[in-house]
Image 1 (cartoon, helix red, strand yellow):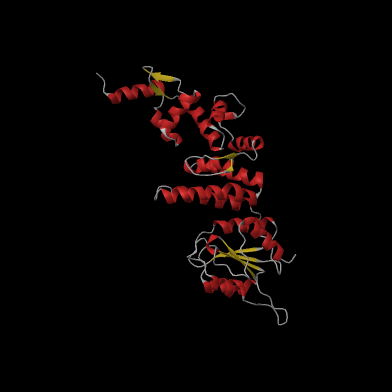
Image 2 (cartoon, rainbow, N blue to C red):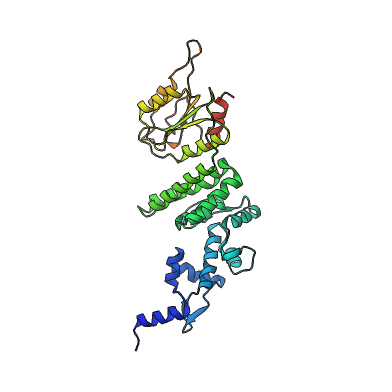
Length: 334
């Protein structure tokens, strides 16, 4: 009698991969693959003894199409119909163009909303959030880049940030907070790819113009730079010169940077109330430069949720990216 290992080897040579092997290859749970088989007919061509699934290369390619389509936010039933060849998403080599699928879905349901998404509590959000969330949870770099690029190109940077990227980042953050350390890698993975997408779509930094420079920095001890990166990219889109200093800029360095650049606007980001410092913001707002008789002060914007309840009456606190962009544009001298 042959050993069980021998039986498995014979089955693999004769009938392909097991469900567990395919699941590891695709980055999905075996139960998901079995569910797709049961519900949508995405089963394997070969079954050993009529019971055990063995997946051929053709079967796996079909499942890969299914994964790519669901990553765009398409409902599983519709994705399965297309993966089975009942639509027009096949391309040479059997690879699905996720961007094309996303745009097709967006055109047909441009403002459709979803209350479910890959185990994350997304709430009432754009359909694209589901695809971004699924790609992030699967750590699928190629699909995530495609989806982020399509969202920014399709909606513009400000809308993509506000209605697609931020809701997904917030959902991942909530998942991480409620699950211990399980989803830290997903948050870091998503943040890194968002940062890359923002840089790819931002034009080169505009040339300096007196009275138009904006300084962006996190307050001391604050390292959440991603919202500032979005603002820097949005200002670059509008031809406004920016000086970006990123996370945890010491007070003395912030003061030196403001004194050397003479900005019309200084944006200070605080994610947490523990890092928000109204005295620092007020000190920067009181700085002056220029010739005697024509000295100027910067407009200081208190950016981020950390300033909630700590704002000063004379210092604006824009609630979102769009409002921050308007405030900078209004202050800049053209």
